[in-house]
Length: 245
Image 1: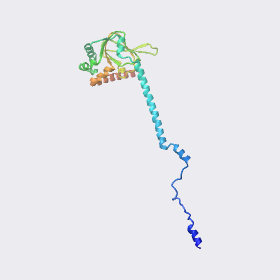
Image 2: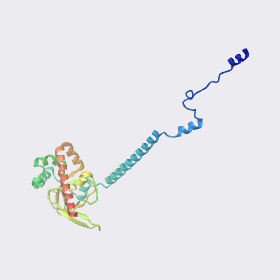
Image 3: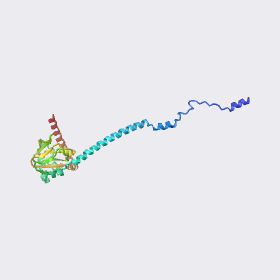
């Protein structure tokens, strides 16, 4: 009897386990851990997609900037500044006093359309250059790049444009006080037409550097000058549009 009790006393009890006693997750094999670590997470995939999209946008922007720089460098290679053109024309410089007198007379003749008084012209006149150009001189060429504009003070100038065959076609004649080449002054772009002096002409020349100096020292007059040029461009574009329709 005591032997049976002793056996019952020394026999280890079988411990029962429940689902609550089990660990919360099973231990994963090593090969699955490695495979799982190599898989990108959902957030990583989203970041990668966003990164690829951003990289594509950056590449397109870089390509656009490179094309602009290439066009700009190409335009600079073809640029004909006034210093070169004046030598080609054999332009003779006028004194500042003579140029201012002609400038005031040319723009005062436009009446109410002229936004500048004689005092205004006297203030901004030193930022222009004044020259005399002989007859039959091409002061600007079609399709060239330029950075200056001209104000016709005396004489007659013809505006021509080459047709499909390359022959020049006369489009108009300018008058005293008219502005020539203002578009290229503002954007250093291509000339739309060729302008030829039919008679000796006195001209006031405003280069891009001169415009910058005018904006620095006479900002109010420079703003009004740009407004005048914008209005002239608007009238010209409306005229061309009317002819097309």
